[in-house]
Image 1 (cartoon, rainbow, N blue to C red):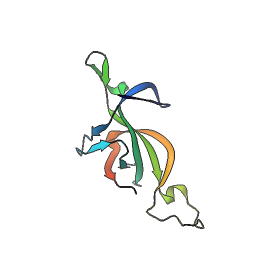
Image 2: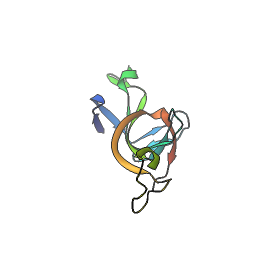
Image 3: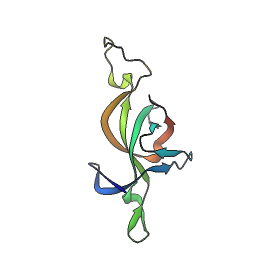
Image 4: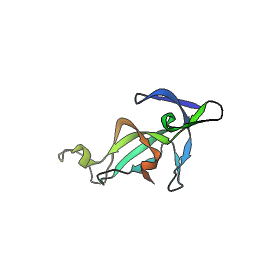
Length: 119
C-alpha cells in the first residue's frame, strides 16, 4: 500500500496502482499521460502520479474506510503556446512538442478525456 500526502490534501490518502475511468472504461495507470478536459477548449496534458479517492465526497464503508470520488495527482505538461516559448531557442520548440513541468495538481479522474502517448 502506498500513502500520498499533498499540500492540497491535508490528510494521508491510500493510493491505487490503477483505476477504471467511469465514462470510457479505460484503465488509467500510474505514469500514464492523459489529455485533460478544459473549459476553454485548449488541450491540457498531464502525467498521472497517484490515484486515490476524495474522502470528502465519500461514504463510510467497510468499517472505517472512506471511498469517494476518484482523483489523480498529476504533473502538467505545457504546450509552447502556454509558455510563450522564445522563437530564437536552439533547438527550436516545435508546435506539437510538450514541455514537462514540476507543477503538481489534483484533478477529478472524470476530467480525463483520453490516454495519450508522450515520447
